Length: 413
Image (tube, rainbow, N blue to C red; front, side, top):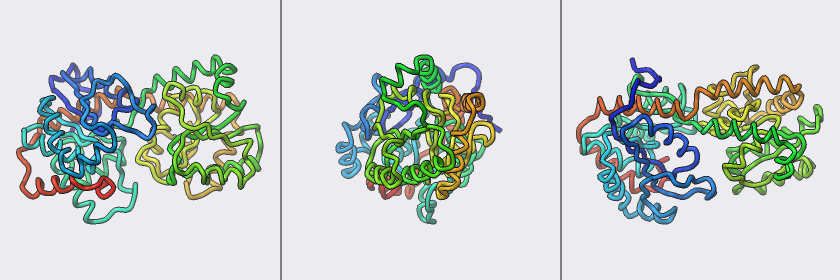
């Protein structure tokens, strides 16, 4: 049975890896993976993000579309299929790695690989409980997944799901969701060494808990604000709450802040650039992520790498992997304000020594889930896919993939 450890030496395989955009997260993973392959070619398809600062620069990727509008037009008129084919012809990989089964570019790349006798690695962060499941959608996913030969997923729950969809368990490897641990660890340490200057530069409160993410309903920030208000009622130790990010739910969060009279205790500084983020983690006393649904939650990796105690809701894909209750944090029910409030109160009551010990435990736990693990697992998956590559698509699968690739993403995700 295959293992999740890296094979010795460097693979002779050429790998093309498709992604919607190359963010700083992706760049860190790809840098680590380059040392595992004869050639690694990132193919960046959409090349846009909600926040431009989220994107990495100098990533060396082949670029397919010029932003969101070009991407959607190419999906609608079917030209994305041929663009992906031309990019893969140019890269000439032995194996193609695709990010998810619902994106048009993934479907086009699977078809190209099968037609050209190349292996396919399906990369996924989905779990069975991430959202409502219907029989026909699960059948479609299983048809897509069955045309791949190996998988790279986040953790055990994600492996269980992709195996259910049709991949052999021994061809599925763990470590997909990783961030540059060193970036957040070193940046947090630097901020702590120069705490007063960093705090002044970012106008940060003396003591605070941190949350970070897009302001969308599933992130559950209004309930986090309500739970924070309740936790202060249990015992006020001088902490504020800082919520990084922005998005359509800003007004709802502001309303929750006003409702609970926390205008001076909850701060919404907006989106912060990648190089500034470690300072926000480094000066915080703890981190809370209480999302109602989350395939993984990379901000949890960031906070753990920065050495923070964690409060994480149980639906988050990272919860069981990165949070060990009693050692480095608390698991909470995202629907239960009292559960969140109790965890926040306990976090704010931590002594300095206990906080440091829990933060150190977070660093140790996340150390095994960084870019190096991604790189070695990707190599193992690519090797398995190459060894088990299959022939051309069945006619009905070709029709299915072509049809799906012309659909709006919202209809197939």
